[in-house]
Length: 181
Image (cartoon, rainbow, N blue to C red; front, side):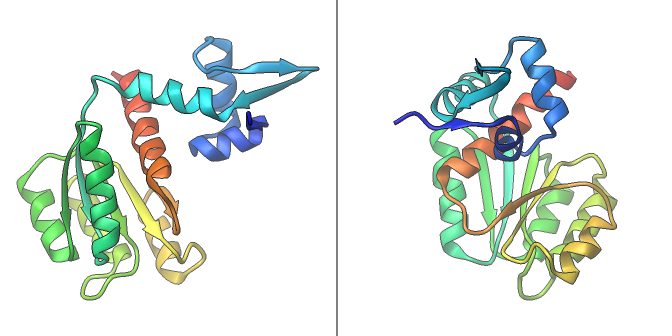
């Protein structure tokens, strides 16, 4: 069965603003149908569009999460699409890798033992201010999240999530960075 989404639902799904969706519509870049005076988006067609637009663009991605299942999910999902993924358990390991290597994107768990995510986010931004970071959290309304927000912009992935959420997040990132080049 076809799942049609409203403009707001599509903006939420792609984790962009409604203005960005309108811009994509004006350029004829995103698959959409007009029902009456309202735009509707077929989720399956949008997922295929995201996949097509990210093909050929491979990213170096760092995943920092203390949960083995989360690290494995990211690694398996993204490596299957051809991305280079390094997944580590601690903030200290992640910070060292950020110092030593160039990454296109970091996925960072907010709540970890040792160095918590908001502190690690600040340290990453101090080393590489332009490195995009997406925070993974089951605590979107926490003090840690507010402290992270005070340090600069980032993406957010709320737990629980699945393969399609990971693919969508990376595809959105790659699509946005391709437009900026």
